[in-house]
Length: 639
Image 1 (cartoon, one colour):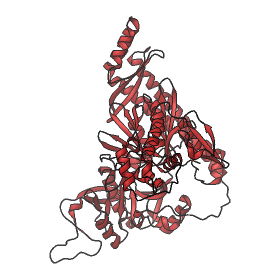
Image 2 (tube, one colour; image 1 turned 135 degrees about the vertical axis):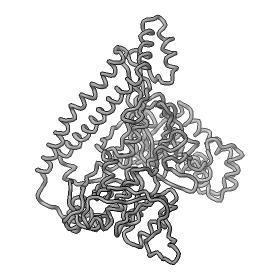
Image 3 (cartoon, helix red, strand yellow; image 1 turned 90 degrees about the vertical axis):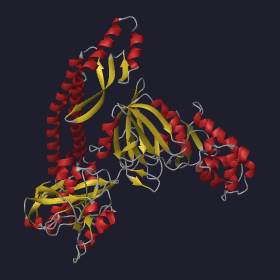
């Protein structure tokens, strides 16, 4: 089976993907840990689905995926930016395995697909990264929010190589022919073997200078096939065991194989690339009719919530742009009543905010901007020719109200199904080995991930208190601490920008892991400072023990911090983790924390007993729970 794409194949795919230009991004989903799915509407064509096999492939698919009821933070944020955005351009960067889709709403955006290594998807706008699928750092570039996006280091583009450049590459090579073509010439492994096959020489030969002219000729032929509109003749390649490959045109290396023609290279890839195997969860749950029913019901609840908010927001911004909408509709009516409809429509289409005019179905799509609940919103809004501005706005209000009524019934259905599942659970307890979750560098300390997606770490003892500050506190980090006994040093790493939510959560975390928890008090005080205020230099004549620091300058105190925490199942870098976090994180990010969670406060329940109970609840070893809990007894508030 085909697993990944080479640069030349990406060139061929991009050639076909240009048919999406002029379409609109409707939704983005994450069907599983290995894929991102984009639903695109192309006027006059209909729905198209673009699948990104992260780091492996990018192509159109005809097979829809089951989408999870919990889309996750990345998906929710990217939807906010690119929903209903029009596709203005699609291209491959140089000869890299990087594809760029340019988008436009009120502003211009770029979706940058890195189809190599671990893979990445970057949303870029206004000359900075707005949202990376995964934050990464190298000496030559930073893929982090707020940074300027830099493409991978430029390599030779073999499709544009001159005869002189090729001779220089061949002359300076200390490798055999196939490796020279694949690595030094950057043509890729498969197509390097194809060149050797067409030359009819041993690919391991180290004598190849005489073939320079022939190599240039073959490269030009490959270029013509992937660049010319009619150059592709896609094939699915099979052997006796099944599908081997999908290629954009016939290759001599596959002359002994069975081949099948495909309508397009995207179609060939869709057939040849295997669907990712879903992780096997609890077999009983997966096979359960009630569990499948619950998944559908929860998804329906999520869709209804979105519909309530989206339609209400559209109605609000129609009224906020009343004059603009009225002028657009009046211009349409004037054009339809006059004899020069096409001329008026053409002038209207020239306006930046006019996205589409559909005379047949009697609607216009215009880009509107407004503020709802102190949040700036821009939407591509569909207005019906047959209705005035008030009627168009009322139509969206009615949709919102209708979804609100349906939501109550949907919630009741979810509650009833949950009850049936609990009642139907088998009483027999199956013995099974509980595996720990994936380990990361921060597991050595106390940790949580803030509502702003910043990693927050705290010491477990004097040694690790010293370590988190000296090893991980940087200039743009923040330090939090409580003056209560036993409080750890807490460092907020600046992964995605540190604002008030992360600071409040870090202060609460410092208090939760102090001796105040054992005292069982309801609330307390903590503070945060900048790294420059944290010093290991004591006053004259004094010394500091391990894990202690001097704070100089103003301390930013936070009062009335509740001693309340929760355990929650999250996903971090495609791995399941159990996190113990301050309750303020729930307040700041509740809608996105959809994993099962348990909220608790100081109480009389023995910590070890609680850890055992939570071990069964989250299906992780007891020690993993004990490592992240505050120091003392607990009382469960809800789960």
